[in-house]
Image (cartoon, rainbow, N blue to C red):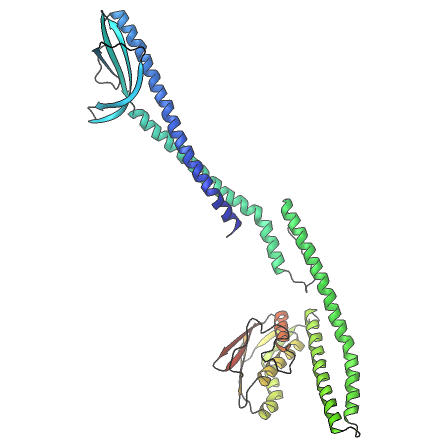
Length: 417
């Protein structure tokens, strides 16, 4: 859930409570104000009636056509003061009862006590109350919608530098060596976050460069001792005075040394690729390259009883020729090395894709670990597990997308560009 959505959901209950409270408060407040106005009008009518009786010594005429009704009747119980109350009154025109306010008081006229009731219906104030409450509620709702939309737009704009910074961090690569350039922001929290991001990226880049330089230097420095050891072993293996047991021991040492030399060369190659030392991009005739590779591998496939089929169409690719050479060597070597007796290799080249399919172990490779360094499908294999990692690295710098799939005993590597 995004922060903006969470923020709006957190405010929603508060706005609903505010809306309900404001609606109820406006209803009762408006009703009270309008009722006070009616009561004030009834009190003024009370004063006029008293004045009329004292002046004319007669009761006022009853107006049947007006909402204000005055009713007088004799009584024996005097009232200390006028009484205001709410009650129901029948309105003949509408043929129904309506809530009304009544003012009841007593007055002496010609030695007789009269109870006078002045009433007026509250229907008009009720309608006005509803109208005012509706307008008020609609205004509050409109304000809420405007605040929500405006707040969302403002929050999106305020958080834009945050998302831009996250995108920069997501796209950052330590091997490119480019410093992070965050967008300018006036928000202090975002500035602190960007400073910490930049510090972490700079530290990671420095540590990566140190590690990379160490790997390069170590690989270069190891090459010379390895070459010396190999030449010495060559001389020892060819020595006539060695016993059979000694010769076997030297052969094992020579094999281990060869494996170590290949591992060192692979690590050195990976370091060169990561350092962008292969930047001689040209348009390569890929179909011609693959046809030459097939000629080179034909004898090996024949000796291993591997049948091959090639479907080659014209295709060009912008890349470093040496990297393409390494890529094709590794792909075809893997297809040969991990094949089965009387197996098959199928090569198909189209304008935008290369497919290499081979028979092999009856189980799929692990896609999540396939291109990681030192990954081996079999623990007992003598290979160093860097071949696919080199393929992946070459694909990244060349703009090729590698995809692996397995179906019915056939392993397929698809390379698209």
